[in-house]
Length: 100
Image (tube, rainbow, N blue to C red; front, side, top):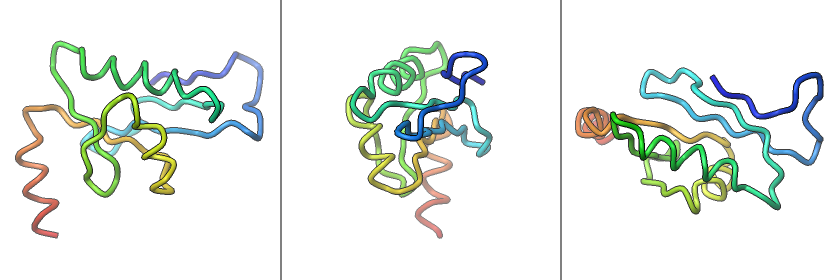
């Protein structure tokens, strides 16, 4: 799990904690981000899209996300969470979301 805060330092109160969670709802990355520069969230999100096993990004309301706007959408939802779902599991998981 990646946590981007220099060792021995606590995040500034103005920093926003963003969690990337896998389809098993475990936290895969935690970032503490200055809201004026969300580029680290965009970089990590893009990393998931480039991995050999491709992933799709969703907010907790199951809306598809893209790296350029995922920080704003995660914060706007109030959860500060980005779901990272393997492309191979999107159809199965999407069906379970619809059934709820």
